[in-house]
Each structure stands twice: as structure tokens, then as C-alpha cells.
Length: 355
Image (cartoon, rainbow, N blue to C red; front, side):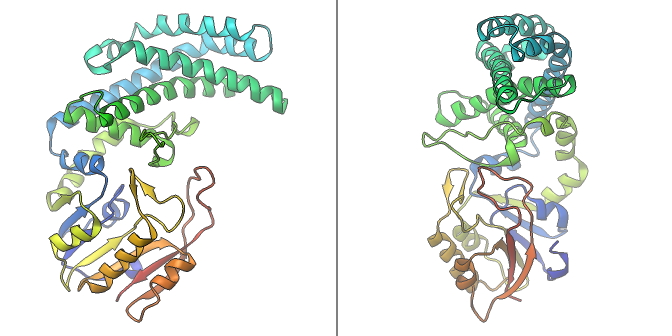
């Protein structure tokens, strides 16, 4: 998307790294300076060479696959239960009482799920798994009643799989929140692996927190059920990624401090994809306000390096960069996801450059 507008450069800088989409697509062969305000994200990248991180991530791949096995084997027994409940043949109390028995029988056959040193809290995990399956049935019954919808067996099977995998996700999200709050002490590698799993399977890889500071994005849904997490992990430790990271230095700083410390020069290039000028500008519990946008503009206008900024078009951003040093390039960037209507899928974006 940006390749036609990229300049030549000696060193690469990215103050708002996030998932690193541009970095991985560009694959700079030069020295790279990578920064993000999310401590969890940067800790994960810093552990990239750690064998302990790889071991932990592979355990999470085993866990994801074990949960898939449970889902596949439970569909045949839980599907008739869902149908009976949705059609009113059994009441909610009977439905809720029946679910745990089915799950417990299958759960005991998966070694990964029986490893308490890895699962951390087996009773809590089982409780959340059971609740997720019960709650899904309750919501499907409500939808069937309100919309006069008949779910076929393929649809019900997909929803049952989603309920089970959502239960796993919600439990691991719970561990992430406990670890962040200091109520649980996970090893550095396990905390990083757990965080990465939650980030990978949360809806749209969004970062959103409750007023109490708990990460609260739900599971991604049916579309996420078939994700190949093991392949994702193997890609992380591929020779190609190792080569890229061999030339990279990682920072967990405010963008202004990062650029001050690293000192990009006239032959360097800075790529920026900052939080947008909108109500949804809180990233990983780090608020990015209009004053931060102004501070970013002031910082960029002072730098000697070439820079490219990609951002949603608003009147505020237009006026902010209305300067002889800045050139505007418009393009359409459609969002893949829309969390609570905050993102307009047809939003117009700007590429702003100083060269």
C-alpha cells in the first residue's frame, strides 16, 4: 500500500510498532529501531531469542489443539442437548445441570489440560469452560425466539465449538488480568506467551480495558475457530524473522523520548501509524489525546529524518499538518473489524510525508 511512496534510507524507525505489519512487509535490511508504549508487546519481542518463550508458546499450541479435540468430540453429545433446550423440550435448569457432565468426561482425556502447573487453576478453567457452553445455549435460545430462527446442525456445531474455545480464551484472558494486577505471578516467558495467545484470539486484536483496568475484549468468534496457532508460533521463530530481528533494537518509551534517545538523521526513515484522532484512542491502557497528536506533529517537524505518517483523516489532523513541510496523500483503508461501531469501515485515511 505504501511502497510507491517510500524513500531510500539507511536506518528504519517505527515509534508505534503494534503488530509490525509494515515492518514485516517491508523487511528492511538495515538497522531498525522499534518502539511501542505497550510493555507487554515489547517484552514479547525482546524474548524472541529465548528458548523458554518458544517452549511456552508450543504448550499454548498444544492447549489450543487439545481444546479443539474436546470440541470435536463433544459436539455429538451436546448438540442434541442444545436442540432440546432451544426447542423448549427441557428447561434452563435441566440444560445447565447436564452440560458439566459431558465436559468433565471429555476433559479428563486430554493430558495438556490435566497439567496443573501449566493450567494454573484447573477448577476455574473448568468453571469458565462450562459457563461458556451454558451461556452460548442460553443466547442461542433467545435468538431463536426473538428472530424465529431455526438453527441447523452445522450452525449449532459451529456455535458449540465457539463456546468451548471462547471458554479457553476467557480463562487465559483472566490469567493475563491477574498477572497484570499482581494477583498472580507468572514466569516472564509464560506471561509473554499467555499475553500473545490472548492478543491473537481476541476480537480484531483490539486493546480495550474496563474502568477497573481489566482487558475485556471478547473472543474473536466462529471465524477464529480454525486458526492455526502452531503455524503462527513456528513463523515467529522462522529464520526470516530471526534475520529481521537480528538488526533490530527494541524500546518501550513515549514516542518523543524514543526519537530523542535514538536520534534519527537526515538519511533515516521514520514510519508512523499512531493511535487515531477519535474517541477510541486508548491503546494498551495508554491514552493518546489531541495534545499528544500536537506533540507528535511538533516532534516530526523538528526531525531531520524523512517520515511517513498514516492516519485517519479528520479536520483536526488536516489542520494540524497544514504546513509547507507536509505533503498529503489520500487513500481508502477499510477496517476489517468494527468494535462497538467506533470504526467506520469506509473511513478515508491520509499518508502525510515530509519529502
